[in-house]
Structure formats: C-alpha cells, structure tokens
Image (cartoon, rainbow, N blue to C red):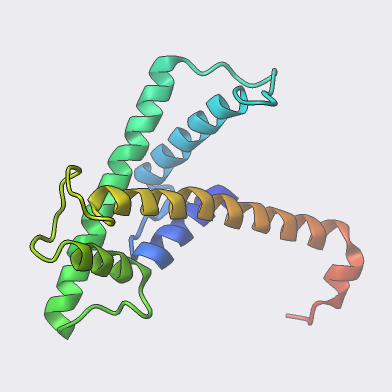
Amino acid sequence: IYTYFALGCICEVSFNYPLHAMNGSLEGKQLFQSLSTILEYQSGQGIYPNTNARKVTSDELIAAKNTWKVFLQKIVKYIKSEAEQYRVIHGRLDVSNNYAHALVHLLSVDNPTTSTSSSSSSSSFDEHAMMCEVHQILRHGHECLAGMLQWITYVLYRVKKVSRSLPPS
C-alpha cells in the first residue's frame, strides 16, 4: 500500500500526472508489478545477492522493463503537453514552482530550435535525459517515500512514547 501511495504522490506532485494508484487503477497495478519484478531480479544479483530471491525469467524481466519504459515515455509526453497548455494559457512556464515545467524549460533552453529532441542530439539535456530524470524521480522518490512511511508507521505503533507525544486529533 505504501508503494502505491508513494507512486501516486510522486506522479501527482512532481509531474501533475493523476496515476490513481491508490484507487486500484490498472496502470498503477501494472507499474507496481513491473517495479516488483525488476526489484526481485535485482535482489538476486550484485555483490550480496539474496539467494532466496525469486528467480525472474528473462521474459518477465523484459516485459517489466518494457512496461516501465512505456510509462516513462508516456509521462514525458504528458509533461510536455501539460506544460505547453500552461504556456498557452499563462504565456510562460512556472519553472520556479513546477518541477515538470522546469524540465520542459531545460529541454527548450538546450534545444531552442525544436521542442522535441532526438537521441542523436548533441544537447546536454535532450528528451532522453529528460526521461532519465523522470525515471530517477519516480524510482527513487517512491522508494524513499514508501520506506519513510513504513518507518513512521512502525515507530508510531511500536514506540508508545512517540505516539503518546502527538497532539490529540
């Protein structure tokens, strides 16, 4: 539940995208499943592999990565569209208060002749870099937020001194 909540929060707050993961959206479920599969695979790899990790097949891993990549592409397209609509209405982007607008602004600053950049561009911030940035925010943002919420819940439940120190609701 924390992961669904965190994914929804990050999408809404960072990118103005209504994922509706807590409401059981199919898209939210697919993202959760793809992230779970990727993390299960990764937990069985590396310097300290978890020998009890579920063995993820290559087909499962490819499908999970594709689901994630398609979602990232969708978010980038959504961000650019939403930013353009905002620019038409307000005459400018809100780069100071809106992270997604700041990303679109970076894209337009580095690529003044085009609003969409190809991966062959020599720009320092192109559409691929934007997708990488969105990936980092979603992946690490939801992990951080979900983990923090789990620890807060645990501490409130297990450490009575903390829960008693809260003001009454």
